[in-house]
Length: 308
Image (cartoon, rainbow, N blue to C red; front, side, top):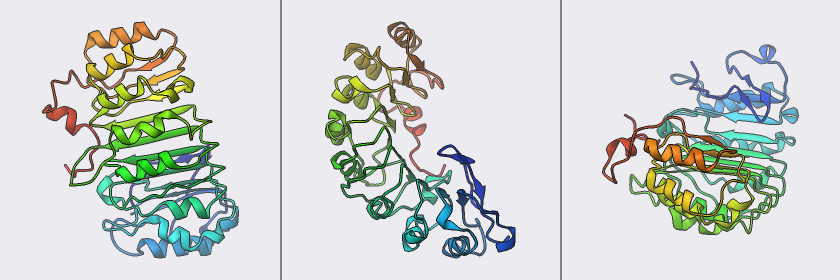
């Protein structure tokens, strides 16, 4: 039994799931693949990956989704980087396609971006091991980081990077827990200026216990004025954050405003719908009103990587 693979289609491509025990004869060639280590028993992830590169014509692979690698790692990027020359056409990569955050290990992502200059999309999910240095990437159009506690240095590196073609950026900030130096609203300031993101049209700042502070920052952020889509979903957004949006710069130009999974009152939801009648405002998954910083429900329903 392999690890939990959430993704069946990625970057517009249906995925073939690699069977490490199927043998070379059972493998169909194709451009889009997912692979994962078994949850229990051999082969371990490095061996799964080695069987993959020996069985599949990886020179034709454009889309790759890497899932479960083991409860204690290793990270998926290390094996991929060791075989980087085998993937000359790679356009879309997902590292960490696994449900449980504690089971996902990451590493320094900078070499991944350096070794794959044709990448148009990079999705990364995980709890521990995140590292990133400022980088330049001309081809990247979509960057998505899903974290239950995104390190401050990683967000700062994204904000300091040169990404002239980036159109979609999604960042899950998570919660300040386990002694991690988690990114906060101050780290967002250079990113929200938009100066290094001239092509950005869709921005998600999500899954945060400080969603109200993020909403307040977004309400005056220069980059928001040229977005088509803004998401502040999946976090602990309350009436305070929504009030900041209503009192801030106009958002009527947005095609979509995603606030789903929130702690808004019924009255505030009605105000938001009335304020943006021509915008697709997603107010689904209402969690009830938020009653302050010690409201356990608001905290627990942010994906914080704890094993409940």
